[in-house]
Image 1 (cartoon, protein in one colour):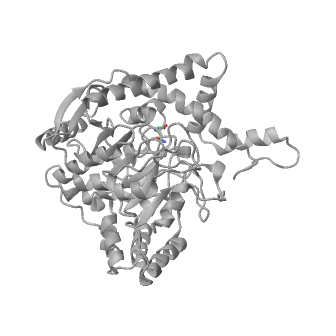
Image 2 (cartoon, helix red, strand yellow):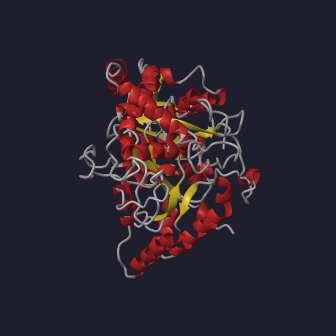
Image 3 (cartoon, rainbow, N blue to C red):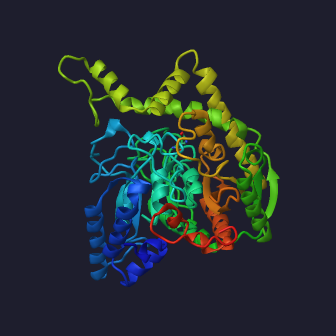
Length: 509
Ligand code: GLN
């Protein structure tokens, strides 16, 4: 059973619910049916919360019946990455070490979603503790890309991207520490946004690398992403790095969709050798398109971007080695070997050995090494200096142009298993996205067509200055409008046996 409701935009669903033309319960039920029908193959969800979703939907319908005001996304279903705490659902972060843990409080983002009347369908799969680019590091098995089930949906927010691309939810929330929203968005043909660091609250987000972690939206249209961006964002006194400033007007910008007179810089260092030819083809066309719409395009060099990846792989593991020390076998989830004969240290060691996967252990070891006395200055300290140089590259670039653009990823979705045993190859998936995490500025990935050689989605990354998130939405919305709404139906259902006809693929999409 498949309902047209699962093909609609979030904005469209909210309008129908507000007008009373469809109930929030019907909307939730349609998406739960879709999950039932396809998630065995897609594996976007670690936990489906059917009862609480229907209860939340009924509450929206009651509010409407009572004539109470509804928010702009009331009644719209959403998949929540399993890194956000939820009092009524498990929170595992894709790790055995948190299996069975029930958080005592809701993340700020979780609470904001609930108050906005957004219906949380369940918890989305992810790479363990958000470390990875494919969801293959999930302790509970990988998610699959709805465009081709033999390929990855990106990561670490790959359950979130797969759910939205497979029409299991019109909206999802992920976190982006090095690219984990934009990269999965790009390779599943949807919109993925990393807001300005501090623009969305980290309170109740299980920490990976605290100076980089940024919650953000995934959606099938730019406007839907903007609506969710505004619903989830804003100052939070519970997060010391939360920005105390108004949320940039991203919804208005998404509606404006106009780039005339805007200065756009193509980043020299993120475009060329090592990139899949079809990715460059679509990227170049998107830039030409922006020019034809009145944007002023120039090339801009950011000379230190080439050092972003190595700097990130010192800073992120360093912070992770500190953050993940809290999993000590006493406070959360798993406890191994606690038979009354062992010391607390032995139980801790056995639990961490059994509970963490290989990539998480690799990062903890790397980070501990980089922070150790004698190596601190040479590794962690140097990486922080490089981080400053990258931030300056952005500042200089934004004196010349309003936004920067690049491909969102060097390649389209890769086959499951292809990079699983090669950490370096996996790390390269975030080549284009990491600079914005190090500098803290805003960035979005918006679909810009299909690569000719494999027919898989390509993402255009638009980077904007800190707290100028609205600017990148303008550009993304203009690209989306110019390429048409054909990309509203990215799921190649027939090819995957997911039960639907494959939408026409005229031209680029
Ligand atoms: N793929 C990168 C990593 O493994 C980024 C992850 C993320 O953004 N959470 O660290």
